[in-house]
Amino acid sequence: MLSTAVLLANSTPPQLLPARELMAFTLASHILLVPFGVALPFITLLMHHRGLRRNDPVALQLARRWSAVMAVQFAIGIITGTVLSFEFGLLWPGMMGRWGDVFGLGFGVEAWAFFLEAVLIAIYLYGWRRLKPWTHFWLAVPLPLAALMGAFGIIAANSWMNTPQGFSLDAQGKPIHVNVQQAIFTPIFGPEYWHFVVAMLLTAGYVVAGVYAVGWLRGRRDRYHRLGFTVPFTVAAILTPVQFMLGDSAARSVFHKQPIKFAAMEFVWKTDTHVPEYMFGRLNSDGTVSGGFKIPQLDSILAGFKPSTQVTGLTSVSAADRPTVVQATIAHWAFDIMVTIGSVLILLALWYAWSWWRHRDNPHSRWFYRCAALAGVACLVTVECGWITTEVGRQPWIVYHHMRVSEAVTSRSAGSLWAVLGIVVVVYVAVFGAFLAVVLKMRTRWRIADEGSAAARAEEPPETDTPYGPRSEPEPAAAGATPGGSDHTPGGAL
Image 1 (cartoon, rainbow, N blue to C red):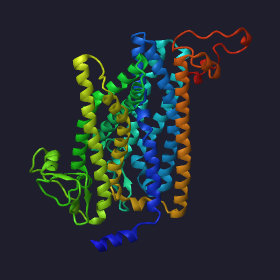
Image 2: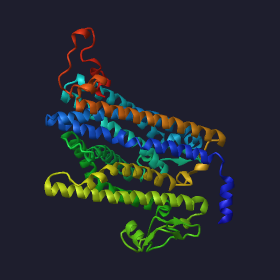
Image 3: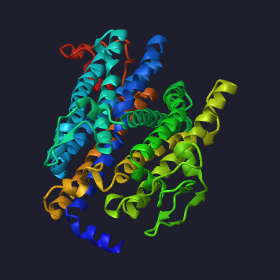
Image 4: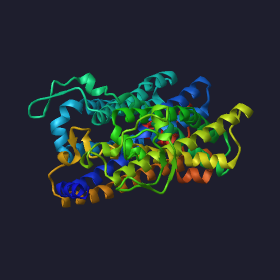
């Protein structure tokens, strides 16, 4: 085994590590924005519909403000998503050059969805002051569908990398006779797609609700904060047990379609039955596990519903064809953290459901709102862990059983890649800092508008009209100006 490890180390290109680190950093940064790009349009329209159906100005105000945050987030997502698109070609030319014709359609679908989403967001922002209420709402209904289409493209590409199919190989090993339908709808696409979509909805719901949970803890008990908490939290709470079942289905799909990845996730060293479940811990090079705790037979029961289920072990393939013990430990920890947080969120959702069933009201405990405020952050952690499990568990393959990561990496020097990583880190810190500054500025304006103090109005003009409310008339001294001032521009939504 030692000689195999030395051989692998010597055959690893020096540029592989910086290329991996650069891709990991940009993907980990971008994935934090994805829940809001995929799910915030749906939550916003849900609040918008409530406001129109019940003639509720508070709900309409919340929907309008969330749409402004959605637009800013989308602008940042354009930057981080574009960087990722370039990195596929710049860092992994071996994969794109050989396999791009097979799985590239997914990226094409995502690009068109991104374009369509940008147009629909612009119409939605524009329509707050210029369209009839229900016309405005129905024109925005395709927005969540465009977001789901973008997720469809990305997951189609990723699921193909995990379970590649829909092609034949010629004598030189190049793909031919591509079947687009098979290349998109791979065996693991369905479980991965729905697990991803529900994760995005759940995360966005808990994050948005967490903002208003913090407000509740600070003494803001008005209807604005109550409604801003209740609608997104209800969406997330309903989907939490659904996501737990979808996650179980996705893990079982990995067990059947990617048994070596499953072995890395669950610390299964040798193929066997009555396999125990390890929670956390560290895998050693001899197959033993240090730390954590062991639950006898549970892994076999979870995989096949009975202790006699046989689970494939890491040693069923050569060391060159499986994750290293370090990679297996990383994938295992990411998977366990994801499952642990999901289990805790189920308890939080049950607490919420019990309160509604018993009292038809939100829980009044400060501990509930403390937990709710942390739930959004915890969900973002699970999103990161999900991608770590998916990508690290697949190692050393970039295309499962067809191309190694080391075969796909660029030939550029390691030094230049480290330099690019440093530049990207600086740029991303600036971009995310600007995003945070803009959101905090909007929050300040909204708070000024809600408080309505005369002194604050003189310093910073607040938002004066509720959505679909009366437009401000121009002052006599500004008769030549556009009626309503800046509040009637798309930026007035801020």
